[in-house]
Image (cartoon, rainbow, N blue to C red; front, side):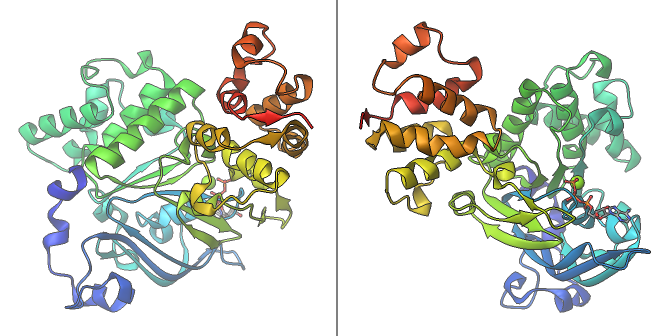
Length: 391
Ligand SMILES: Nc1ncnc2c1ncn2[C@@H]1O[C@H](COP(=O)(O)OP(=O)(O)OP(=O)(O)O)[C@@H](O)[C@H]1O
Ligand SMILES: [Mg+2]
């Protein structure tokens, strides 16, 4: 396992100063830090220098080894600030007042320099072009280890492994300039993986990527977490593509954590969150379309949808809804509100269902008639499998 075997930090005895800061849940029977706990925040409040109001409010968060945590929330609610705390940039670079206790990889953030988190926490940001500083893939991936003065043989082994992990074996000699956006972001991820961090932190890593680049990056992250047990904390808005890949969802609102649980529990009900100026933000911003549609269809057909059955991907939704018989009218009625959410697939679903009563055509006929907008294909695969009765 990548993070488990290669970093011996968890084997060191826990210093007493750290033990004093620990959440009791993070302690073993002898009082030492549970090595499975990578992030331990307890009542953290943070106020940027010169600001009157805190940007993080009483945050308590525990991240265990092997977790894949997705952080969601409206713009300005403090997501990036929370990520900066995880490698000590807050409060050591982005200065301000830190209250409460924060222990990351067994080190007290308030007492640890950012450089001392270099081999514990790997940070990846939105724009690979802003993060990458070398012109050749191999140089970029070796860069951090060279700065840490590691031996040449070790650097070569780590570099090769890191490129393997992100699916870029054989790209070492390529110029960064000839890579796609998704490939560049995978180089950024390889560059931080080369130092074998215990925690991978990503702030909207696909914000500047096209759908293909986004899919590449999410596939790599899912594989790193599933196959190598890499612990990941990520801020992302693309819930449709991530809901079935992450193990936990944390929702923030106005500097506080308002939900922390499984993805299914997170998307079993709509939640009201607020933007910085306290306007309510549409729930659709962080709600997977398939979860939203299943909840709507269940409500429209007066059906119970237990939270442990809320679908997180099209396949799950198709399987679930295939067992439902829903009046055609209910489909149209239930789909209508989602048009307001402006999510393209749900809008397409509504478009298909309003123009073509569900019982009228088989899916093959509908596709051959070209009545299906290209982008509606995944969600309409679910739509076509819902048995309907005309009312
Ligand atoms: N260096 C700083 N000094 C003072 N205020 C800051 C600083 N950085 C961010 N802020 C403020 O802190 C608040 C939270 O910012 P942050 O970037 O953490 O939000 P976010 O949830 O990541 O937003 P987004 O989704 O837009 O990226 C905002 O009001 C922002 O203006
Ligand atoms: Mg941000």
